[in-house]
Image (cartoon, rainbow, N blue to C red):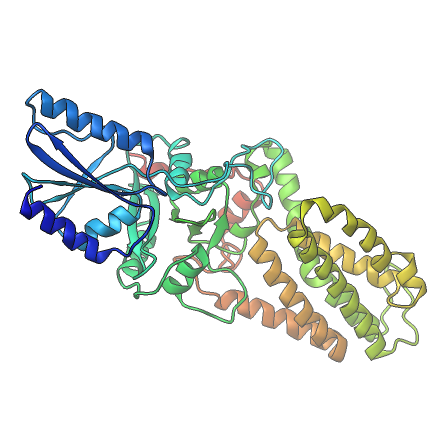
Length: 454
């Protein structure tokens, strides 16, 4: 091996710690010296074999050394070359060149792209994003075969060097949204990026507002639809969730079923879903206010001799028990999940009512509100709605109808003050747009901006 090539290898070795999966291979073909440096844990052995075969064939036929079948990047900075190698690429050093050749040989461990458990569909596609950003980009390209589809890749973080890709369609994407996102990416501090939530916090800052400033989804078909509508999609390696921006409150209430049903059925289910989301927010606090102020309702529920603290404790207990059951179902192993149905019968059934833990009326109201939460397509939006439902319910418990009205007013103020890119959070309701409201309730969910098609 030539001394110059040996010195370059030594320089790279200093940058790397001792690891079993760091593989170094020295090749000598027809008087040419080459060194292959790669990670066995992140590289495809078949692609490495094809690479060596390509070098051998071209050298023995007295042709300039050719790398195939992967893409090749010629790098001069040794630190950047090491980062590419740690991402799964094969690093090739030649005695006849001062450059570092980064060959695409990545093969990340990944699970199957099954349908997301939180965004299921009856008629829609049954695939979903995984923790491999390359596969996720492929799932989007499979749906949009437009040459103007742009995928820009960045590496963020000092130690993680996580791949962050953002996707958009030229001439369709909103230029203000794209410009704002790219500016924020350039100003991104040297903070480690491990998930899509981590990325959003670094781009837009942390806030006490529980409402999501972007939309999260694990469905590639949802991303494809939004790209056609001029949105921007961000993907983070090691995270199966995509970030769609900009977003609004009503954008978060859309479900994949709207895109797979007829217009009448889609509009009908959309309106029912919005009513259910409204119930999940205000039904329980409104009922609490009516009970506290001794106002009759159409339900003819008993309201006499209501003890404030007992009534409040029963409602809080019922809501907490439902939340406990929800969280336990998420974290319980599948083989033990059937046991939760028996537990739910005991803590929410007739036995709990007979023991005086809560009344039937309280269970009915809590159940209706939680059904509304489950109707909400966005998991983050449903949790934020639950937080404000508890807050408004507490105000109604202590101050009656006055507290309820003040809580609703404060909730609307928070929604109006929620900052997003380009659009107000309550758009098209505030500011009101008849055309956009009609499209949300009755119009076609897929709308491509015709003015930007060319």
